[in-house]
Each structure stands twice: as structure tokens, then as C-alpha cells.
Image 1 (tube, rainbow, N blue to C red):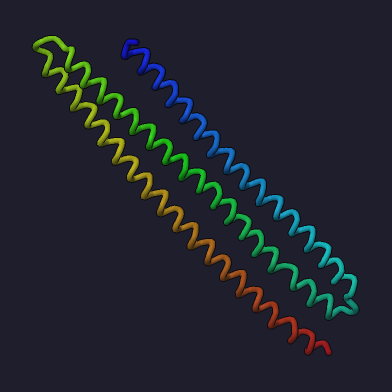
Image 2: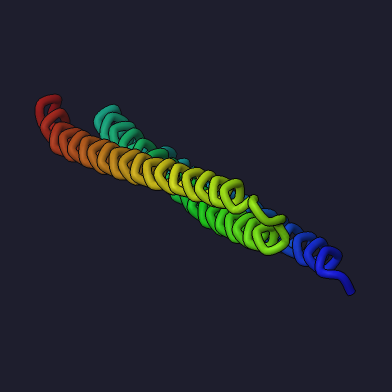
Length: 193
């Protein structure tokens, strides 16, 4: 069998493997999002049942005020936690896709290098300069790609750390607000009594 049909078959197999890897990555992310949403729905239904029971047991305005102040803060915290989980899932899929892309680019670079080496072996006498120029061009393109990939990874890392810092600050502010609301509710009850 000729080397070219073997290369074509190998390339087709690699392309199929890459497609399946991409498909698995997307499906895995989708599966995690569905699982997260099902858990959120179940927890929300359980909480609604519990809060409904508590609302029925409220006897006066002071208890109603205390009850309503306990409703706001957990909802904000849960919304932030949900957003963080979604972000983590999407970021995980993005990391997996980046790895797959880097592997594919690396394989492509290897194949181009091998093709140039094969071309150099079969090139007519006097074409050494053209082959050297071709190799130099490929090396320059590879270097440029690696620089861009490195800058992209650094930017993604910086963005992720900024989002994490903002999320943590928001959680802290929500917790502080909840604590303030809890400490204000008993004082409001005592003031009206």
C-alpha cells in the first residue's frame, strides 16, 4: 500500500478522534449544566415548601418583618453560587477545548514539518534555498502561534482571577448585609414593643 493512502487514512482517523473528543467535551459540559439545574430546582422546591410552612406560622407584624428579612439574603447568595457554578462548568469546557485545540495544532505542525522533510528529500538539486526558506517560514509561524497562545492563556488566567475576586467580594458584601439585617431585626422588634 502506498504511503499517501495510509496518510489519508491516518488523517481521517485523527479527525474522527478529534471530533469525538470535541463532542464528548461539549456533552460533558451540557450534562453538568443539566445536573446543576436539576439540583437547583429540587432545592428551590424544597425551600419553597419550607418557607411556605414558616409563612403560615407568622402571627404578627414583627414576625412578618423578621421573616421577610430572612428571605432576601439567602436568595442573593444562592444566585451568586449558581452563577459561580455555571462559570466553573463553562471555564472547564473552555480549558478542555483549549487543550484539544493545542493538541490539534501541534499535530498539524508535526505533519507540516514531516511533509517539508519529505519534500526536501525529493526536491531537485539547487532547491535547498527554497526548502530552507520554507522551513524558516514554518518555524516563524509556529513561534508566532506559540506567542499568541501564551498571551491568550495569560489573559484568560487574569480574567478568571478577576472574576473570582469579584465573586468573593460580592459574597462577602452579601454576608455582611445579611448580618446587618439580622442584627437590625431584633432591634426593630424591641423598638416597636
